[in-house]
Length: 341
Ligand code: EPU
Image (cartoon, rainbow, N blue to C red; front, side, top):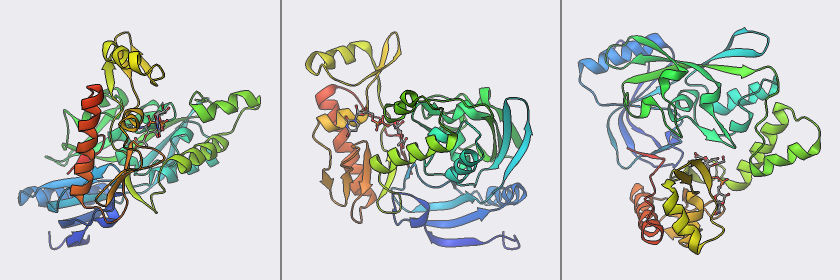
């Protein structure tokens, strides 16, 4: 690895690379700028049998201890228009682009598809792995294809959106092919014709105004909502929603509704109901509660925050106490959305 033209950091603090702000160390940290560099790095790491973890903006991770291996990070940054037809415009975007920088450009140019997903922390590569979603839209709806490199061979492979097996905060890259491919670029398909998703509470107002909003107006509204509900990443460390919203059998929902007539819920299908984890956590009295340096965010209890120099242990313990009390009260097992490393 010595003669590679890229910088390798040793015993490197990951504090700036995880939004929780955990000050853990990695044995090595490598940021690469091109696919060729990535392939070269992978070959070298393979030769020495190194443990590898690829991260994006670190907005969905909880480092539980120092990482005894190499952290890879994409610095592949470009946003290029590929082609357009009467209705759509296709953009190829490097995996290292900050997701919201891409959203800002799309809204500014009046292309539709990213505006509801504005201001989500993280990078483009992770958007395609995590199937990020907010305010009635999931990113799979605008993904056309995902360009990757295989970790084991360095060979490129393009996944069509159907092959990515997208689900709620889920994809093939989180299960069957976990750790096997690194996303290098994503091709998004934006709409030239306004398409609106305004069913989510505060966005509904746009429907009653009688004037069609621009992508920029929706983006601005989404940013306002997120700022009012979610901690400002620069001020308080968090990883967004800590748990997934549980999908439960109808009977479980009915049992809860018998005691709590106003339990919020969304019908998933004939037999399943989604219940907001935030509601379950609030009912258990956790809103605003602290545990060591960690706390349950007072405006949105689905979010655990690094209130004051929290250790990974503080956050893990708090998460597990919340899981226990939700289970004891409602017989629902909350599943973390955040990945423990
Ligand atoms: N709620 C409460 N108490 C609260 C806040 C919320 O009971 O203090 C209940 C309310 O019934 C509310 C419901 O929870 O209607 C849903 O709350 P919210 O609209 O804030 O959304 P969420 O379901 O908690 C999900 C995503 C967020 C995304 C929002 C908006 C997950 C795990 N989280 O949260 O995504 O921004 O919807 O679409 O699906 C993330 O993934 O990191 C994330 C922030």
